[in-house]
Length: 366
Image 1 (cartoon, rainbow, N blue to C red):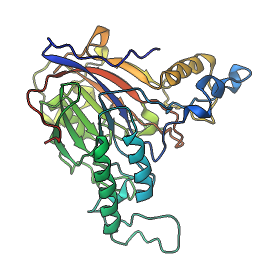
Image 2 (cartoon, helix red, strand yellow):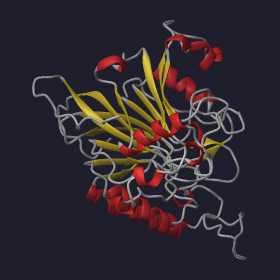
Image 3 (cartoon, rainbow, N blue to C red):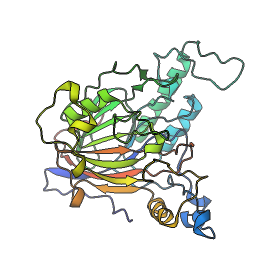
């Protein structure tokens, strides 16, 4: 697989072909430097039975018009972890980098009653209130990164004019259903995702129920309320992470019915599964996603080697067989970089899409 060069805008078109690079769940990992050996050296082993999973998160990441990071910037939400991730984002080859928090990013959650420095010391106490100085510190780290085009987003809808002349409308939300004692979590069904119908991309930390949300135990971990909001809005792209082992991309076809009763909206009732397609996945069911300790067969090895050499997996929504039909289809992307065993083995997604031409400057977002 060869990723084509970043598209150049046409002066005569009302839309501009725009490249979006999507990552999630880096958990403080940074792209593996070129100086540490190339992919072929890393994977060359005597015999297919000893070939292991490649490192998909490799420098330099492809150039893009915008980068989206869907949360879990850290492991434990500490400021030093946040600084490492924001420094990585500042160096990526894109004029704009949009980032949300995830459930691991405790220091960003100033409403959470859980102490954000659980390092196993005697001073740890899950009943302590959130450390406000750490919240202020990570917010300052995010603020400092703005000079290099990084924008930390809280829940809401934003509009950005990109350097290529296009305008991106995006909905962002860091909230996920309750699981353990982490940040930005809510009890099942208690959170409302107000996704407008005019956004190009919805970026959340967690998946919707029934799409790229299957855990290694076979359970569905997505949010039903989020799915219903996506069905009503039908954005071109919904990107997320959170469930590492469900990495991949699916181009989903919505059923043609104009509406469905709220009580019956689900992936089994409103998705046209026969005309939907999986564009990328690591392994077939039963979802045994390989890790660095899992052996691969030769066919899987060659496929992962190709993806890793390209520094990502490419999808063209603007032209060709996957050209998206707005309002009829949505591309769902689980862009988790970490594997289920917390190794940075999975690939970024690189997506070309048509965006409307910007009429007036709006660089700060609204």
